[in-house]
Length: 181
Image (cartoon, rainbow, N blue to C red; front, top):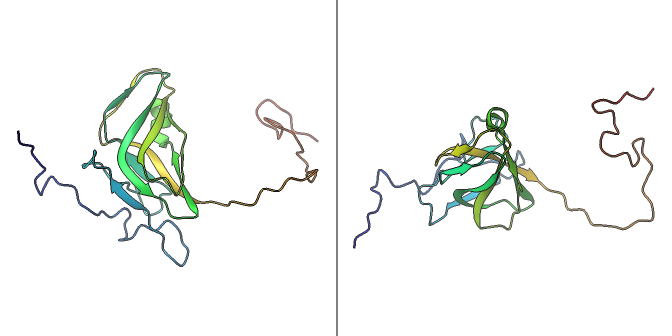
C-alpha cells in the first residue's frame, strides 16, 4: 500500500506572513512580540491565522474540518493549529460579527493561556433558527491577543465605598429603568 503526499504546489508553506508585515506584531511596544503557530500533524493543510486589514484587532481563525452545528446546539470546531502565545499575554477567542448577526453563531470558552500548546478548538454555539454548516477553510472566529495583569490577591476586612456600591445587574440605568435625579 502506498500513500500519496502533496506535491510541492499543494504542500502548505512552512512559514506564512500573518500580517501585512513580515513579523507578526501584537504590541506597539519597543520589542516586537511573535505569535508562534504550528500546523498540527493531523491537519497539514490547516490555514494559518490572518488579519483582514492592518488595523484589525483580531486574527481570523479557520475551520480545518466540516461540521454541522444543529440549531440550539454547540460544537467544538478544530482549527488544525497549535499556538505559543507571548508570555504576559493571552489569546481571546471572539465571535465574528458577520456570523453572529447573520446566523446567530457565537463563541464560548475563549481563553487561551500562554502556556497552552495543544490543538486549538473553537467552541461555537448556534443560537439561530436553523442548522449551520461550517465548511473546511471557513473563518469561524477571531483570535485577539491581550496583555494580562496578574495582581496579588489580598484579603481585606472591607472595600472602599463607591457610587454604585453593591448594585448588580441593571443597577446603572439599563433598559427599563429611570435614571436617578
